Image (cartoon, rainbow, N blue to C red; front, top):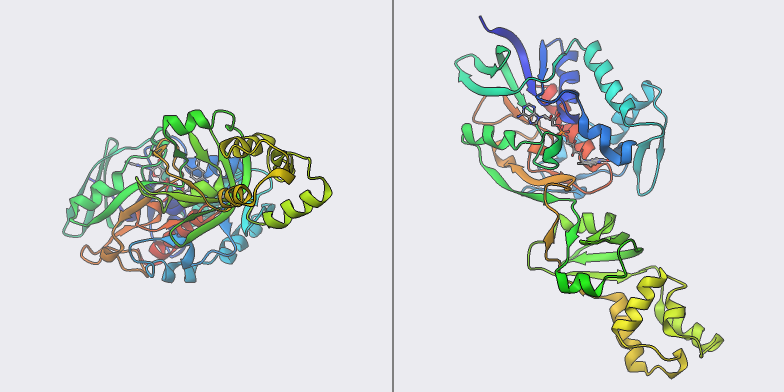
Length: 393
Ligand code: FDA
């Protein structure tokens, strides 16, 4: 005889655990199944071990989706403030790092412990190291076939995340379930991921790996102002991770170095003070020396500032304001923080995350075609979509 539950949630990550808390809190008999040995592994490694658990500015504008309106309902009904209240009720110390990003003072493990305590209080059961062999649609709901036996449930929530970081157990399972039930999936691709450069550009950049600088990076009308890092494979740092969600193979990105500075005034003042100094000396007051040297060398600017023609100064200013780069590719799912695309929101009810055509089946979290910017937005989507499903499943 199969075990019976009201709600089975596959995936004990951020979204699945939040869903279990909400459904269990409504008196539903909830079982969460995960093939991993520990719950919330991505929470544990997130934010450099301190978990950037939300962003106080999170709103629909911070998410990419084929339907940008889909995320509105869930985000409005479970806000960053709601999650922060939970964090504070558990006495977890936190701080705002930058740009509204909230982190634990101590450890991301505090967030996992909080979610497990809330699940236990809600009576939700957790079964780890349990791979799911098959899902069958029955007249009354679903039969979940695992190596340890079968479970029948009226409601089934798929919370297995995306494809990023396969070595942590990411599987693409949600997309296979979608396919089984005839639900479309928006093409998936690695996002929030470092970009690579071709060998010739890397050779020209050989002195730059490790250099970080504040930039504005643009792709079309999208712009992010954060740090960029040169690496041995290409480009990384928050500005690049952000723009990677918008960039496509073959396209250019435009980088402005130190967009906070008016370089025309910088050079005019430097010329007045000491026209004998080299361009790279002036530049290196405002950026790492290796980058200043590379820029000066690229444009052949080796003489004193006072002897620089206005044409060559203009070329330098143009490079500083609009450095065009054409990445060769990305580092892929191996290092991507998230998966862009996923279960097509057109198939889902935005209030409940339920599949409109399959009563009782829900998709939540990263598995769905809603992808946040870097900075705590993806967890906020996991909490909000998990909550929305848990309030209805
Ligand atoms: P998540 O991936 O968390 O959970 C899915 C669960 O399903 C896992 O426990 C997995 O084991 C399980 N599972 C998968 N396949 C299964 C199968 N076939 N059978 C059973 N179980 C299965 N975001 C943010 O907002 N702030 C941050 O600081 C960071 N930092 C960060 C760092 C790094 C290195 C990464 C890779 C990602 C981040 N993120 C982040 C993104 C964030 O981690 C991500 O968006 C959420 O964890 C998504 O939550 P989900 O619950 O949807 O999936």
